[in-house]
Length: 310
Image (tube, rainbow, N blue to C red; front, top):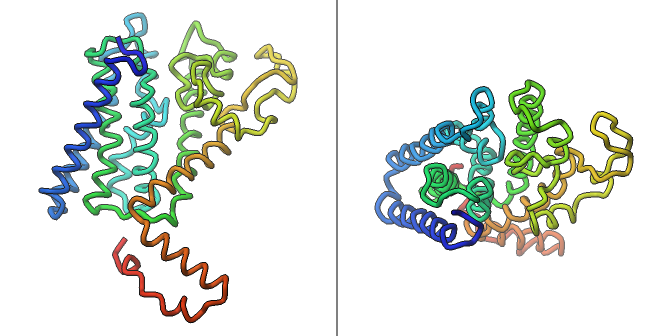
């Protein structure tokens, strides 16, 4: 059975990371200059992730049938949304969307592999567990290959954008959950109070309705930057049995500030691996400008990166 950081989880995590590293090495050594081939191979990996996401219909709980089954393949979490939209984002020429693919795809995909909440308690070699690790491995691997093979070039100057795209994705997830509940698809035994307070097991992975009780240290990181106003009810909500002042994380609103701050920082740190030269050049340029060293600023070597088509 899978439990976080037990031998089965660590074995599957190590295998997934090993496969990603091997694919990156193969692409870098043998396929780096074959742009057309790598472009469509990467698209194939993303398309495979799209299909694998919907394969979850094959491993539904035996006591849950349609229409509840439909809820498993909706945009119920960040990685679910990523699996559904990445093939289309990849075909677009939007730098912002491809930045989102790289930064958020890798960060959330790796976080899911490290904390496999939907796989915990299931047999290590069951179809759903293997599907889980393969899917999240693809969500990490394909965007990384996209950058390594030169199909997208990162810039530290754009690292503020992915977190806001992620916020839009969280809005989609919020609407999805509310629509599913209002339509009756989620069904019993859950009620509106269970949903809004984040106690709906298995449907609050993005922490939109507050940090889950088992979130542990992750919850502390996010709640630390959340204003206290967004952690409690401002007035009585009779339909939920909640009184003014009771603990209640404002759905979606509470996570925007910590989410934007943390993911912007992480995106910036990741960008330095691929765009460090441009960053330090920009810092020198800014320093010379602020200190009025105009001659040194104007004599700086031209940035070759600026001439590369993006």
